[in-house]
Image (tube, rainbow, N blue to C red; front, side):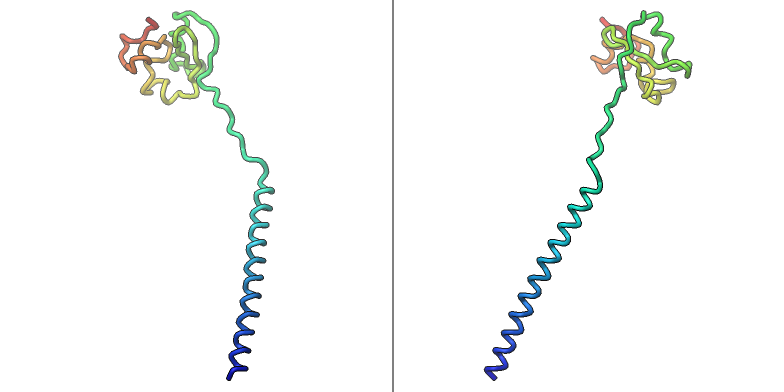
Length: 125
């Protein structure tokens, strides 16, 4: 009986060593696959800088009033403290029917500072 238990213990040790070797081999293979997959993806994508709103130059307040988005061939412009910005990419917000359409074609520094949607606040004072 003692020989049988020694044989069982030897078999268990043998299988345990083999199972450990297989587990290590599987882990190494998985790590290799992860490294290989990440290297094939290439560098991470770099987000393109957003360029809206962008400063567009100088025009008079009278000229600015013509850039409200009513004419789809013209950009939508607004001014903040004398700087003119093209907000055309936000046409849904600043164009006709948009929630911020009252800013389009106006100097709106005061309204923005006060977080106001009142037309009497559309000025730069």
